[in-house]
Image 1 (cartoon, rainbow, N blue to C red):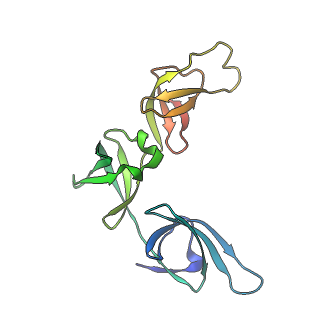
Image 2 (image 1 turned 120 degrees about the vertical axis):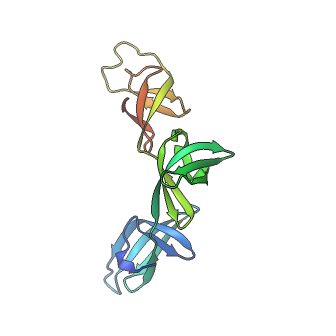
Length: 187
């Protein structure tokens, strides 16, 4: 693994530090009036989500880790495990559903996802930023309500609650942003 200097750490860089894999979330380069410059780095553990604040001087050497992304197709879920298939080798992989966190309901059969690997260990699953969902329950439109920019609550076919514009009704397909959990546009 390549070693980099402490002042070369940037947000998004993955490091092997204190026996774990850490992603740099925030980096602040500090030049105090007295003493040497350093980088104040907020790190997030990729395995368990813990956070850590660490100082790295420019002379400090840290191990930078290269992660690999593989596009895989979601097949099905069984006993809290998600089964994905590699689109090149057709090899199937079982991953914990917890890797998706609260974005899990947006995962649909046949959807392509980018899975981040460190060696053979899967660290995260990235699904498309926008997915199409069907509105199964919402309030009816009230005349005159569309004059001001307002939203009404809706429940989607995957059970997620979002706010939608008043002109969208039941049984309509909408595009939902999976990172912000909000309405994007009509499908």
